[in-house]
Length: 279
Image (cartoon, rainbow, N blue to C red):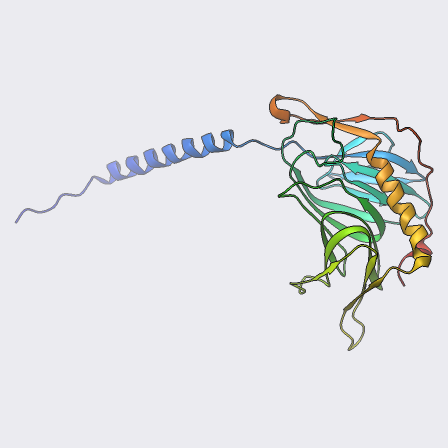
């Protein structure tokens, strides 16, 4: 009976190395073929009072008409300060006094700028933001299919596909007010299904206390609260008109550049009292 022969150990090692090399070449080629999205930016439309911005451990004063990398950025307004920013996907955001926001993720696909329709998001984007304290007003552009936007507080989570809303949070609770559009609101990470918040509605999420678990109640926005909410939305929407985002390189795959635009009428900065935060 003929004894079967086996490849020499050195041959097997060489074959494995060759296979790994081929796999590595294919992987590198695939990575090179896949378009890399530009680094998303945020543009400072207006600043009133002292606001700080931090990225990569570098803390500096926020200056109007400046642009910063969005992902990983921490923004903080002092007790008597407000500001308004614009993401490079066209979303405007207004910051109340004494507000801290952390942009945990902001990814944007390559895009070719289109000056003929500034109301539509230029490309697919994913936004994940933590509001540590304070309040923000959001005014989004029309988001394209595949985009996502999630804002969370220590008590709640809101996901939207395009809307005008105000999110306020304090140690006692979170209030999410929907001025226009719809959003999915969840009472913390354990609330899998969530509830849909419609235009004119607000969700109040209360923190757990003693034996009373955290709760969420949806109701109509009280008429007395509308003026303060509308002011925040007005400032967020006005900020969107102060900048045009362009990109360099083929197919808009290069660096995002922010070009300031002078609006027809400049908005008047507002100062919202922290006392208007939810109890």
